[in-house]
Amino acid sequence: MTQTLHPFQAPLLCATHAVALLGTVILPPLVWRAGKTAAAVRYDALTALHTLLARRRVTAGALAPQLSPAGQLLPLLLQSMDEDWYVDTRRMGCAALAQVFRVAGAALDDAARRSVYPELNKRMDDSSNAVRVAAAAAIVAFAEDALPHDYCDTNSGYFVAALLIHLDDGSAEVQAAVQAALCALAAKKGAVVRAEIGKVHAQFRSKFLLDQVLERC
Image (cartoon, rainbow, N blue to C red; front, side, top):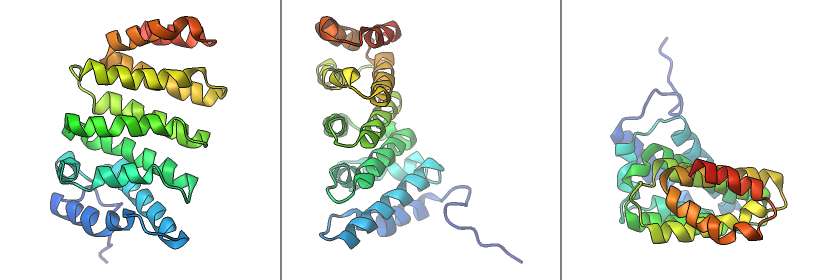
């Protein structure tokens, strides 16, 4: 008897099927619509997208067109990270974005990077620590897989400066997540991270965390 595999169990979707699945099944429900039912569907669509990417069922080549200026994926994910209805939608939006970076971060152009990092920094001010930790994890993925060594120092400095504030957070979990993000950024933009830490080092309570990041620079 022939067994039919669920799409998420298949070894790898071919590019044509992956593009069709994204474009016709997963992305349309991410478009914002009013109401709790639509909000619940957005969350489910994000969960499906995260699963699809986390299990590497889509190749970078299949995902890359959605990351072009004409693609819908990034705008919809960034919109989901600002969701009002459910905290979990913002958290899952961050998690799905992290997987986008893992799969096809190299496909981002500088304009896309400039659109992404302010939204990640914005989520570091979220009312939910779970969302803040997920945003920090997305920053780790961004730094490791989507940020080239020669990326603009000025924009990198803005990114690091906004993130550093949260290293002095009252939550140990958030502090650890932010430190991991800063260490990942230090591996790519060490001179920038060192310079930004130098500006605020004297003001910090948690200087030992800063010093550990400096070691990574």
